[in-house]
Structures are given as C-alpha cells and as structure tokens.
Length: 377
Ligand SMILES: [Zn+2]
Ligand SMILES: [Zn+2]
Image 1: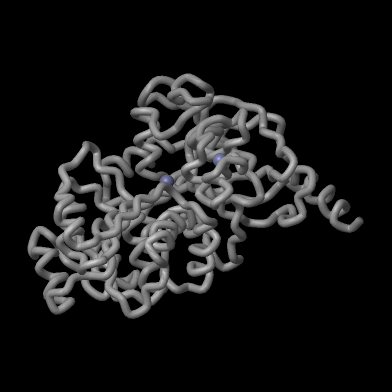
Image 2: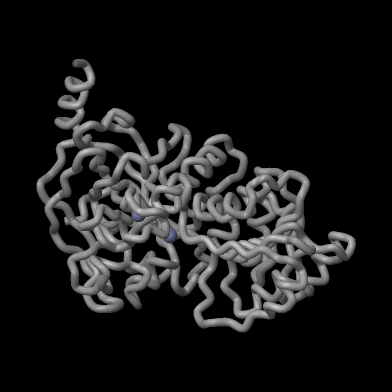
C-alpha cells in the first residue's frame, strides 16, 4: 500500500515529539506556556502541526471573562485549557480511517465540529450545537470547548479542515475562519446578492471580510465605520461606497443611494448600541438584517419600525454550514484580497504582545497572527 509507505516516511520526517508547548488559561487574564503531551488523533481526526494562528477579539473575551468558552459546561479557567481558534498548519499524523488528507497537506481549520448527533448539527448549524461544550457527548470546538491552537500541535476532525492553495501564505490562510464567519451570515441571509445593495456596518475583521465576500457575490456594497484607514481597506476589498459616520449620516447616504427606498440588506458587524436601529432605518421594506457582532450590553430596539417594514433579522454564530470551505474557495480564486486585513505577525512565544496589539489596536492592528517557527518549549 503506497499510502502507508508514504505515511511512514513522512512520519519520520515530521519527527513528532512526545511533548509540546501550549499556552493555557489560568485565572482571568493570566496565561502561560506549559508542557502538554502531543495529542493523538482519534478515528476521523488528524494531528496538525500548527504553523500560524490569527488572534480574534473573542480570544480576548475568553481570556478575560471565560465566555463563550466552556469546558464540560463550566467556565474555562484553571482547566489546563488552551485557547486559540483561527489556525492553519500541516497534517503530520492521520487517525484511523482518514483518507481525505495526506501527510504534509497544508490546511486551514474551521473551529466547530459539533457533536454531529443533535438537531442543530444535523442541519449543518453545528456552531450552535445543542451539546455545545460537552466533549463527552462528542462536541468539539477547538479553542472554545476543547484545546485550541495557541500551541504547537492540535487534533482536528477532517470535516473542519480546508486545503490551503500552494500560493497562499500561512497568514492569509488563517483568515479562512473570519471570512467563513462572514460567509455564514451572508449565506443565511439569502446568499444571492448580484445586483442588490448590501450595507456592512463596522469595518472590523468580520465586516471587512463580509465586504470581500458580498462583493465577490455581486452585491453593491456600502461600508460604514469611523476610521478612514479601515474604510480605505474596505474599498480595496470591493466596497463600492464608504461612509465615515463621524462625517456623514449613513442612513441618509443609503436612502439617497437607493432613491429613498433603502438597502436590500444590512450586515451589522459593529456591535454599536444603535446599530440595529440604524439598520432598521437603512433597509427597504421586506429588507434583511444580519447580526454578526456582540454588543457589550443589552440594547434598546425600535421593534415597531421593524414590524412596520416587514423586516427580517438573522443572528448567526460562527462559521456554520461549511462556510469556511466556500470562503476559502473565494480566497483561492483571488475574488478578494484577505491579506489586506492581516497587519502584524509575532512569534507564538510572544502571544501576550499579539493580544495587547489586538486589544489596544496598536499601530492600527486589525488581524494579528502568531507563528510557530521555533519550538515553544
Ligand atoms: Zn474568531
Ligand atoms: Zn450537536
């Protein structure tokens, strides 16, 4: 069997150690590097050597407050748990029955595998699995409910892996999860946007990726935000119009653009307190609003206006329905340039610096990536 010979040869080449370095979360805002055994891939899983991981705002949230990470239903503090979930790497060991990937394949990693047996997983909505957080029931969401990617190795189920084209950098490949998150909301909102107007509010990583994806799908895209430099990146990703809300009223802009009728869609990625009311004022009757951001507090919503306008609201979590696979396909076809969102790279051992850059947006950081070029231990 040639594949087995190949496997053995590669296994030697990859020289997998018994122990690895991994960041773990102790008390809130306290992480450090520890030694852990290199995990072994189970049936239908592969072992990945992690090459690069993008830092996400959710990582900051988890490290400070625990949620939305859950280990067997509990907050993730002092559980020897490793965060990190926007990863790419190389397949270095195959679990039993894996034929979809071979040793050495470069792959990007979707976060959620889900339990595979609940009603939501059966529909492809595995990011909101009913057994979320219960690894004992088969749920796996790396960096949220099982060990994540701020480490040297991790195991993944094959359905969460996406091939990375040879000409794509490691850093760009880490953005497949972010682009997949945008794609999932757009997919749930309808997914066929050619010739229709799409407002994206908030030029963070998800909003900027949403501009790229919606533009690739043929929408006329309006991006709103408060920072001119990010709006400029949005233009390069395909936004037809940008509105700095500090200088111009975005609702008036959208209504003028659409002859007073309003936009077909608004994808809310800002988390701003009044964003949903602005979205409600921007859409046309029967328009659709997608919610992909987490406001920090409960917000007041003008429901009467939504009802009057027969509005539809879609709230999505993460990257369901294999959206990362399709987002990666658009990236591979160079339909938009996700590299524009990546701003900084640090070695994995300097994760704390990367987190600080992300939190404080030092040097206009958008997506900060940490790399494993050297051993962590
Ligand atoms: Zn993330
Ligand atoms: Zn499930």
